[in-house]
Length: 339
Image 1 (spheres, rainbow, N blue to C red):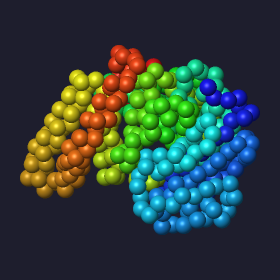
Image 2 (cartoon, helix red, strand yellow):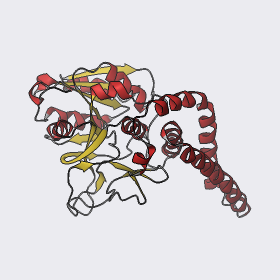
Image 3 (cartoon, rainbow, N blue to C red):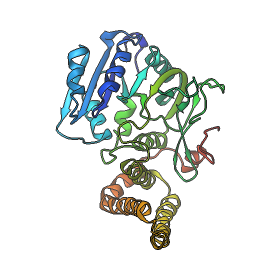
C-alpha cells in the first residue's frame, strides 16, 4: 500500500519537444504547487529539441532534472525513460503544454488514497485559450465507445455549465495524470511502439483488465494547449490516432472486436480508393490522395508490428483478471461522455 500523504514522494515526468514558452509556463505552475518541494522530483525528457527549451529550463528552474535524447523518440519512449528513473510512490505525467493549478497534486493524490484499487487519477483539463470570455473543457477523464474510439468526456462543453463530480471513468488521459507506481510496475509501462496518442488508453485498458480502477477529480484543474506539438488532424496526428487505436484493440480486445475493427478499417480504405477515382475524374483528388496515403501507411505499419503485437496480446489476455463483459459496461454510444 502507498504511504501517508505527509511522507509521499512524487516524480513528475515532462516529455518535451520544442516546448518553448509552453514548457516555461508549465514549470512556473509546478513551482507554485502547494506541495513540499523536498517530496517533489521533476524530470524533463527532451526529445531532441532544437529550440533550447530544455536548456533554458535548467537555467531558470533549479528543481528540474533534464535527460536529453538525440532525436524525437516519441511520447511513450520519453515517459518510460523518466519512469525508470523516478523516485517515490506516485508518478505524474505532465504534458509540456499544460499549466497545473496549485492544488492539482493534492487533489489527485487524495483521489488515489480514498478509492480502493485505483491506479490513476484524472483532472479536469480546460483548453488554455479563452472562448467567448470563458473556457471550454478539454477532458474530464475519458470514455471508450462501442467501437473502441477514445472519447474525452464533456469535450468542448463550457466550463461551469454542468455539475461535475468525482467519479470512476474508463481512462485518464496522459495530459496530466497521476498514477501509483506499485501498480504501474505490475501492469507495465507505456508501450514504446506508440509514438503519440492512445498510449494512455492502452495502459488504462491493461490496468482495468487486471482489476484496477481509474477516477476523475474535478477539483484538480489543468490548462492545456491541445495538440500543440503535432497539430490537430495533421497527417502525423491522424496516422498515429488511427494506427494506435487499432494496436490498442488488437492487444487488449476480445476476438470479435479485433476482427471487426480490422475489417472495418480495410473496407474504409477500399471505399476511399473508390472515392479517389471519382474525385480524380473531377480534378479534385489531391486531398483524397493524402487520405489514401495515411490509410495505407497505417495498414503497412500495423503489418510490420504484428509479430510484437501478437506477443503482447498473448501476455495481456492470459494475465487478465476480469471479464471482457466488465470492459463492455464502460463502452458508451456517444462521444460526449455522459454515462
